[in-house]
Image (cartoon, rainbow, N blue to C red; front, side, top):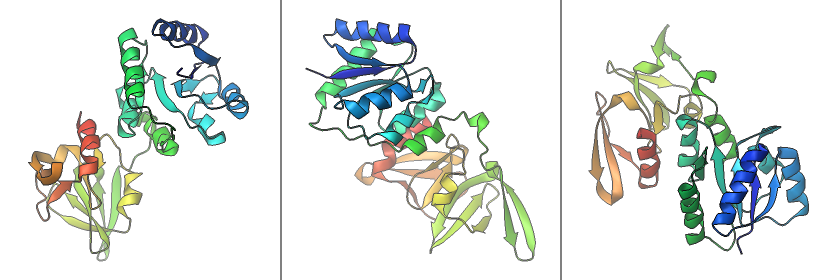
Length: 252
């Protein structure tokens, strides 16, 4: 028997989801409606096999639950967030259902879980990263320009003019659409958190590229992809195999 709970702050939505589960032979063990109530439940109950989890609860984001208690359950998020926010789930291989929930989509999600059901679940989620991605891009202060020292001068480079960032010989460089290179005093890891993820993607250990700079995408050996940018051509840009799926999701 699949042990399932529902965490949803809107009680009519929770009851509807409960009925939909009953129609496919699953009885929800509990219906919880807040972060506080959920934490208390997990502290005194064994983790279920599956959680149907709303993102925004009455007293905060549901991710706060996992910051307080360890949860070893599979999760299907239910959300009314827009397409931008859903990139968070695609990039972290988490299933989600967009509200209002469709019967067939619920059946498909449950079926997918049952087909791949391991004996024990680990919540493999970078909560801090997802919370960042769920912030509307209009509300985030991403880097708009870089001030770079060139000799005795300071040069201001607009982020939108950057084709790529790359690392070489333990240094980080910025390459612009007017074919100029600038040395930066930051690592690619530090840059990742400053750049708008809608526009920039780290395709490999060595490169972060701008979506508007892509000239061509070519199939490459070992299920990888080769990226041709409009101007940059100093090194091959290869999307590593483990990043290909996320890269395709980013493009879409």
